Length: 184
Image (cartoon, rainbow, N blue to C red; front, side, top):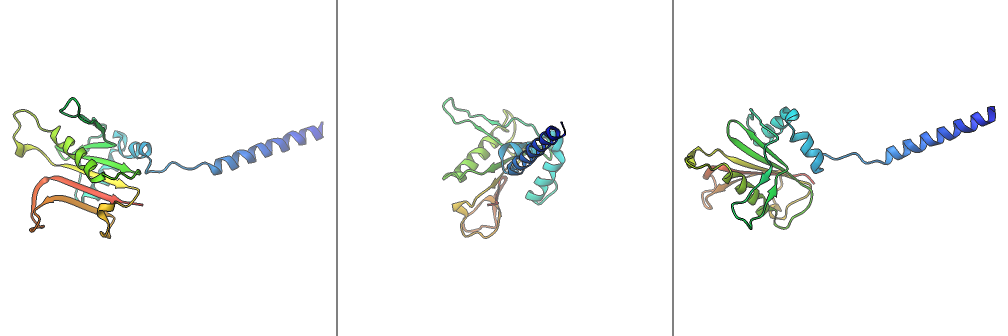
């Protein structure tokens, strides 16, 4: 009986040791995974974390953050493309932002970013509303890779506006702002 008990105990120890080894091999989820990213920064319960992230990226105070906003980008055309934003945030009484995590490389990423920005911006246009009342829309894209169009720019965070070609210090409108964070 004692031998049998020792044999069972050794079997349990081996089983536990195998379980530990299996656990050690499991990979942790990464923040750059869409589902993890959306659960950290896209949920109302984590509003303060998103508020802080936006403040850091935009370089200004962000408050009155509203999350869980409709992330589906509709088109005005029956044959138009429909996109889905990772995180859509409304803040500061009317501004909004799209926060995207891009792990996959797209050849046409700049056009994709602009398409998402324009759909988000035009959704804010309401009948009878003056154009001057429309608040800025901001696209924030965090990539897991370098973007070929940004080669030669030796900083991880770039900010883009609509500017005049020879007078680069002149911003045409504050309503378009794109931030790209390359984090390979």
